[in-house]
Image (cartoon, rainbow, N blue to C red; front, side, top):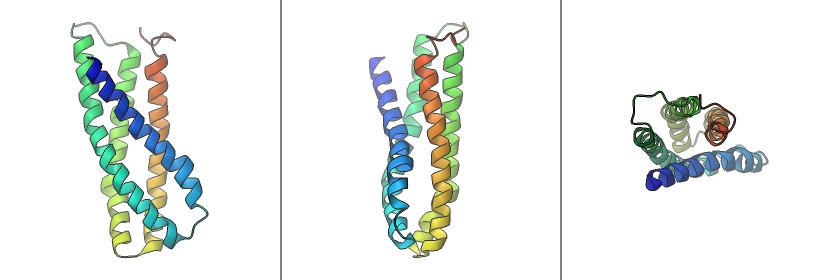
Length: 154
């Protein structure tokens, strides 16, 4: 059980922390650059980051539902905060998959073809989806860490 929790938490840290870095640090730093400078940079960063996110998208539900099965194997209902956390997590996975198969694929194609202004438009969409997922991720962390304390367990 501690191994499942450790893998789960590391996946959360990598994914949510990476989104925070992308939106808050990289996003602000690249606003000062011209399109031909920031689009290839974002392309390299997202390629590496999205590989890790795919791993997290696989590991988080696997470890999360593994812990649910281990802790709550009885027929009693799950505490509400766990249901909320799981629902938000599934939502995050769906937002990421949608982002990857739509905007990121188009962004990558435009970048490969050196169509930087067009790639920049898709980059803005990707940043919006990352921001949405970051907010979902922060909400999930708050629910997961405070749910039992503030009474969402009933």
